[in-house]
Length: 319
Image (cartoon, rainbow, N blue to C red; front, top):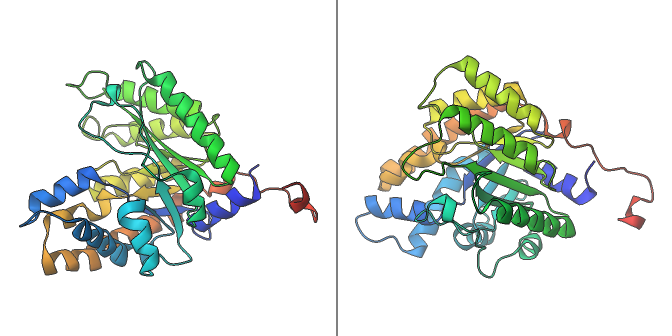
């Protein structure tokens, strides 16, 4: 069971069938660095925001929701009418810093931004990116942060979307698939009980290490069993065709949809002018349509995990 406010917000972020088909473009420093590598001159704040608005213009009509940052997306998107009133809006609260290995990375929050301000601005959900390893020195600290953000979201009656990302303690090595799967499942089990409303999960198998669909299915089913709340699949930078395959398997196992970024629009970063505009007007929205079709066919409604709030005639008196 959830609250009236959270239930309403989750409904706004999903399709009529209860599936998350969410465009993610809350990327900041890493995206700006990539744009600068391909741009003929340094990318200004205005140009950075313009790129995000171009992505929205092409893809958002095919999406049920949008995950975008406050500085370069929410303000401009709302003021210019780029974010439709019918589209659910998710906002990050964390600063991303990829210059530091995750084992040494502490969670910092966007200065001047908060759960309270996000709710006042009309946001429908709060996202927190959380690099996590159960054996890292920062594990307890990060669990405490999750509890604190969950409490803040509960106070504002706004859904909490947690994105826990498993990482290797060895900065020179990737997680082997058996350990990756174990940690992803463990994170789902742990954070499902900490006031999180939706888990934004990475695929529990590294496609570079294994293309065995049977292994993929088994890992996703194990992940789904561990999840006590709705979960959606993130793309984690894989190519579109790989992500489409992962999305199908995840949704068959029990996922409630996708929250997808680079798999849709990554190629646009290296394009300029008309080539970029053409890609964002054709290829990118077509990809989202294909993912929406996958979700419509295979995804499980988020309501499967989240019971509606009681609706007695006097519900509002104790709300």
